[in-house]
Each structure stands twice: as C-alpha cells, then as structure tokens.
Figure: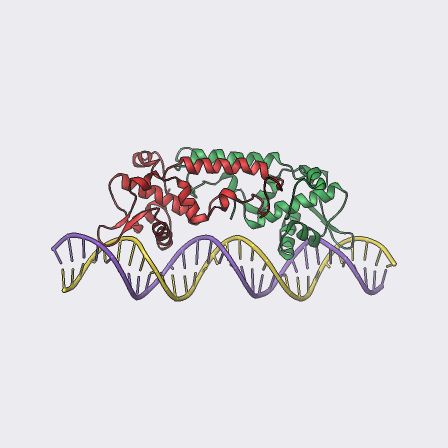
Length: 145
Length: 145
DNA sequence: CCAATAAAGGACTTTTTTATCCTTTATTAA
DNA sequence: TTAATAAAGGATAAAAAAGTCCTTTATTGG
C-alpha cells in the first residue's frame, strides 16, 4: 500500500472528478465516476455516501441527480477528504506507531517524521478540491489510466 | 494506519532494539524484544524470521542464541528493512494509486507527492539501523512506552 | 399518478493484515 | 548424550479493509 489506503485513494480521485464536472456545471452519477477514476462502483458508492453524509460533497437523487460540489466545496482543502476517510492518524500519529511518542519522549525517527508529515500536511492543505479542474478538463492531468 | 503498516512499524522498532543490544555485544531473544518494543511476540517472530531469511538481521538458535546485527548490518539503511516488509510501492508508487501515473502522464498530485516521497526516501536512506544506538542506550529515545 | 432514475442503506462476502499456537530443527552446556 | 533453550516453520484464527448485491427512499418528467 502507498501512503493512503485504497479507500482514500478512490475518494481523492472521485472528488477531483466530481470537481471537474461541477466546474462544467454537471452532476455525475457513481457509474460514470467509477468508470473514469477506475474504481469498483459499489465500493465507491459507499465512500461517496460517507463523504456526502459529512457534507464534504453534495448529492441529489432521482433522474438528473448525482454528486456535485458547490463553490464552497470546490475550495475546501483535500485534507478534509483525507481526514474524513483516514482519521487524523496520518496528521498526528507517530511514524513508528508508538502511542506515547512526543516531543518530550521522542521515538528515534520523530524529527525526520515531522518533516515528512509537515510536507504531507502542506500538500493536503494547499490543494483545494477544485485546484486541478482546468488541467483535468484540458486532459493535461489524469485520473484513471 | 500511519504511513507504514503495523508489521513494518514492529520491524523498525525491533531492528533498532536489536541494534542497540548488538552494540552492547548481546544477542536478544524475541521475548525480550517483544516486551521492549511493545509488540505481540509470536507475530514479531514471523517478522524477524523474514528479515533473517533475507539476511537483513542475523540469528542463532539454542541457548545463548538470539537475534543480532554485525557491523555490516548496523550500517545498512532503514530503507532496506522497509523495502523487505512493504515492497517498494512506498518508494515508487503513485500517491493516488494510479498505476500508469508518470512524469508524462501525471496525476494531479504527482509533483507534490514526489516531494513527500523524496523526503521519506531521504529519511530512510540517511538513517542507518545503528544510528540511534547511543541515544537508545542513554534512554534519550524510546521504543515502547 | 406513475415509471424511470439515482443515491442511501443494510446485509453480506472476499481478501489482506494481524495475530496465535504448536511442532520441528538446531545449538549449547552440563 | 541428553535436557534445556531458542529460532524456524506450518497451520489456523481473528480483525480489518475492500468489495458486492439487493432493497429502500427520494426525485423527476411525462
């Protein structure tokens, strides 16, 4: 596994896709999303359900329904998505898995891990969900193949 | 989960512990290691077996036996341990889980992730297994509580 | 109103990770 | 040479993550 869980990877890809479509004024259904971000449809449905429930994305039922992001949603940092899926272990936890590791009682990798974590936090906070819309629309960036 | 799997966290803590003991000229048994790095004994045994099999740590059976590291082993980068346990997805894989993501066909987070990955790689390569021996012996760094 | 559509939700199954237990093999020292 | 010790190895079990399927609920347009 990479840095994020598979669930989280799907979530990130999905919100980028939804963002792009929202920018173009369209709502999108899971089927379309799943196809375009290369994820299992039923599983992705669960993930989006969760994000929808906590208000990170919007959804509407019925014909013409689907998932979408309003202006506020598009400007949220990716960190919110990751936190909703992974919890904030990745932002705060010890790199070596020690629960009592802290500044006062550091594990050997404490300092180095802080740098890594800060880099991750920076990335996830500076990246808004809608940040790459134009590049995605232009096809300069990819979400599947 | 943090950045590494639990298995990998145990492995890292264990080799640091073994390193420390080896520095002091002692071999250590799983029971002692498990107690001191707060990990399940039987599970840790499997992990050390694996590391031993690929030659990253040494072991000997019977009374006075145990796990240990020779001078070469103490100087190996922690990256070797992580690679043995996790594979090298963490060093090479796309942060968003896309198999065809590359410089030519990048995912949205490609650039940012490269920085994160490079930081991790730097940390794991600059850290030798024996790097913290003295601090561990002095009790300035911790491996359990 | 009703048929079609799409998300929400519940109940599972599968796979992977984490973990245990018990037997075998090697080594040591008395 | 044998009793004790410690790692190696095999077989399983438990828990968590990933994934599926089917039913329910809400919404729309005809």
